[in-house]
Length: 475
Image 1: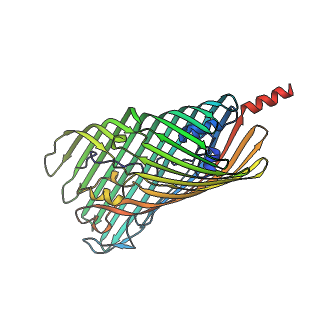
Image 2: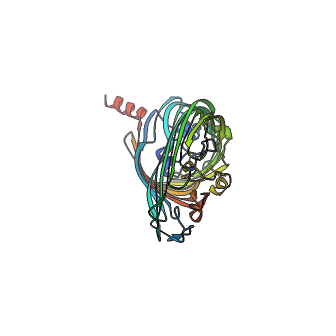
Image 3: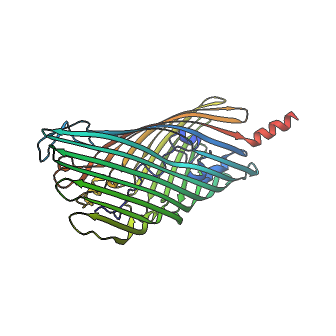
């Protein structure tokens, strides 16, 4: 019988995989030292003090095309070995393509104080993380007198929303800021597998398994940052985000298995798990530098994420029951205290902007988005189940590299940005070992996976102070 009590799947696409802030997104996320847009409440709130007036920002409506490809999920080639000889494989790989649209942030920044000693308070809501994947896969193994079919249907959806209350102040060349961050994370994951083996006319084996989970978590964190103009052409910045404090969370999962065999044991089993879940924000330390001139700037950022196991955990109760023909099976109740493995992450970003005309800017950048999950090979080595559950499949520890390009235009008191972000990622996921899947045991192993993403965004920032001044001048 299968159980849900093992380790879960850590975040596998970086901690914040959605570009936020018009200027920051177009520059690949490099804004720690000189940023001043709606990304600042969750990146470095000190940058809010660079905003010249009160601003309402909607940044951005994001359109994303994501394609995940596992070229050898089913088999390494056109055949696999089995106790009945070599079997032809109809489809060796799987893929998932998703098109999605969602807003990434909205912020209101209220400016007061003097020109030499500005002060800003801000409220913002961002979506720094969004993962959507859907795999529908059907394949066959065919040999002499042997026919086998496997069907997989998988859906993964994870969203994180972060609200921030921020404050910033400027003192000459020094700017400081702080944010209180509240996050809500939601994750839904379902996997269904249906396998059928037919040997001649009298022997068959059918194996059906389904796994589903839903998770919600509310967490609280704090962020403090500083920016300093060291010279007339050099800025530096730093920010520290505290590990989150867990406020509330809930996890509910279930797994059902049915095995029907004409010549051997048949059984039905079900497992339910429910309890407290945590999906928090890890400690993050960010450093940045920006070189700038009258009509240009070049920025570089580095961010280190130091996760704790407490931020990716589940505690609760597992209830298991089954009936079978080969042996008496009893209901069981167990406690579960599971943590998800994570690793330290270092992400880098390099960006630049050039003022083409008095009202137009060209921005571009490159960046990394590394995974927090350990290699899939390490996870595979820890799985000792004779018949591994489908829940072990479709985790994707992928390291991504990307680039961005944007065009900013300011007309009167409206600042707009159009941009595109593209990335390529490689890593591993888990699969059943092809040549052992019908040998009485189905262990899992790592196999290569790739991801391609393209995101387009449009944003608008309305300078309310400038708009009010223009209106008063007209009156």
